[in-house]
Image 1 (cartoon, rainbow, N blue to C red):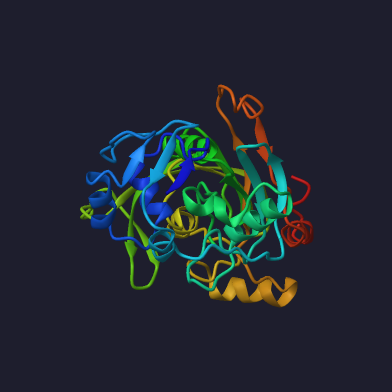
Image 2: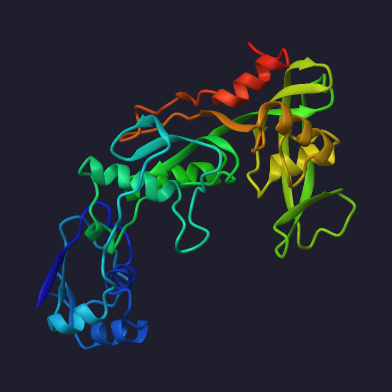
Length: 326
């Protein structure tokens, strides 16, 4: 018999979900059969799988060690170099400054993303071991495009991941970006539209309210011009809804593509900036996040504003184009 003790990162999850994470190679039918036959019990009592164990509760697996081993994927985590910087950290949440060119999460099994880097960072601090992934794996709470830099939030604990993800989903965390666009923009504005995604090309298109919207998502973006010079404008963008490529596609649809954006931008303008500054990524930076009033254990973040410094190349380009300081 093997006994598992529920930790704070596991508490509140359904028992059947926990078991399927712990024995991740086991068919669901096997797990439910073992529950029915009382080969799996909770605190030595018959269970159904729908229970939500609390911290300190114990699960008994009345199974052979060979059976358990056969149904468990080998746990391993490889340490990787870290390229992000920490903007804020506590026991539940980490705010990272992601560099351009780094994935937020894996796209392929062999990828190394910010997720792996932060887990490696936690391993180095003794806050994470591969065995902890049995029933909970720390993760980013949202995503940034690979070639977008800046603030991204990471849940170190189940409480942190669920709370921050919920606040983002409910749009209670204000997300503000800096971007450099082609063309002059003079007035603050809040614009709405509808976004359609082509899964084959991973491109999105912004359409008008009158078009067919059955496969579309509504988007809302606010922007404030901070400084203009020549045919360039530095914008502060408020991401109100958070859809795929929303800022990039929305601004491009208005005739103001982001400099360096190879998917939605101007080939001619991008070529000039690549030639002059060796620019390889779009000049879009997740700059600030504003948090609502929060209860413990998140009181340190309550009402706070986090800011990610502007990347060196972005700042160099702004200086070169007479757009810095802001």
